[in-house]
Image 1 (cartoon, rainbow, N blue to C red):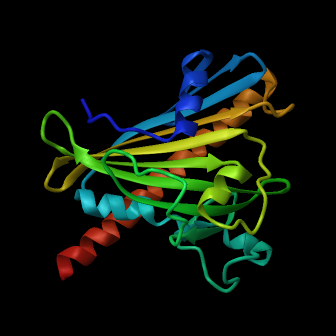
Image 2 (cartoon, rainbow, N blue to C red; image 1 turned 60 degrees about the vertical axis):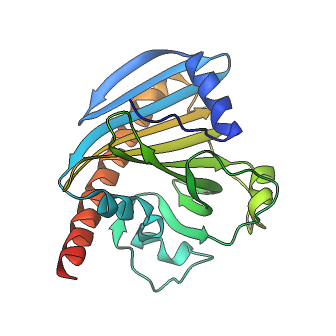
Length: 247
């Protein structure tokens, strides 16, 4: 059993809604478990996968944290806040660009138990229209009851008021989802082996995504996004492992 982490309040609210929701749509698509259900007027979506990578913990952590390397070169001209000439190292269908804000406001929040890092991402997205939001990234490190090293990375979508606690936003939130959080749990299961559990949860009251008829399309999108992410992590971890070995 992993150590108990204390997540931020927004994540706890999302967890409560999720726990109260009966997941009446459950599928397994290309290795990804996808689920959906409704709680009052809110539809919940979940995607989940566990993979074993033949790389050390530090290499896999490196691959998780390279958020700015994932984007879509076809959308270079849509970039507003990053260099239009930079090529994406790894393809992400809908990501236009990612702003990484490390110099965040240090007041107004309290460091969590086992927290080792915290910063903000600004995301610009294109999917039949332009969208944008900010995410809070928190990194936790510790050990489980088997004395295995554990690293947990959370990415939580923030509303405009939450974002202002950490930085001065250059754009306002515009998203079809009300809340979303991604959680990576990395467990060191050997000197050159890391087990990764990735979970994505999202809530929406969007008039289209809320409908039952939209669930299959969202399921397909979640499955593809998670499999693309796993592929990217595998490639980045492999390159990082070779770099470490050569030094």
